[in-house]
Amino acid sequence: MIAAIYARKSTDQHGVSDDARRVARQVVCWLVHRSRQRAWQVAGLLAFNILIALLFETRRPLDMTWDGLWTTRTGLWAGLLLLDNLVVLWWYARRTQDQYDLAVRQYREGNKPFVVTKKEDCAGGGCRYHVINIGPGLAVNVWYVEGDATQRTRVVPLGALGSGDSQLLAEPMQREYCDRAVVRWHALVAEAIYTRTARWNTTINVRLHDPGGLMRHQLADVPERDTESSQTIEAYLDRHWNEGIVRQAEAFSNQRGAILPVRER
Image (tube, rainbow, N blue to C red; front, side, top):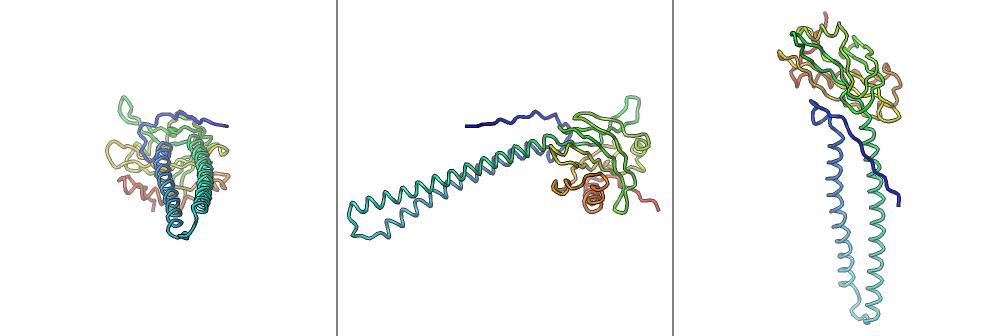
């Protein structure tokens, strides 16, 4: 018998919504789903065996001899037992495949970067905004992206960020975020190691319309299979910016009461 144990220690994700902690939630949901499915499968197999036995007893010829009845019953139960063994083998094969798929999914989730913008109050007054990778995976490259459905007004490379690493936003963007009159939502696109997980991982970052200037974050819902074909940041944004990221950002901003971009006339 060959067995494998998969284990991983994630970094703490303070201030992250429950929707962002996807690995633990997926494991729990998978276990609940599989336990319910197993119970129904066992109950269905037992009901099938009982049904076949009842059908035989009610439809068999009444003039069968004891030896003939015993032989027929033995053959019937042997056939049902063989069928049950085949079903169990199939079930074990499916369960092994499901466990493998879950381990692969956990591995991929465990290598994803989750880059967000975070506000920090300064001791002497004022504030600063950091870009921090609170995910467990390495971000090989990070881009700060602003704009609307018509154009991308700003695409700024921020370099690499390891898990837990952070850096200050550039001075022009710092001034904009400290001045509440011109704050804009923005997207942070993190490029991960594509051999380990999805290449592109995007977060939407909005500032709430309150004196504290707090940030709220959301993962952009872009299917992983649609991100693998984009080899460059330009190709990824061309494909998903207007219909995907901008639409989700505007909806999220309206829900959270953020200060929306003011378009120049």
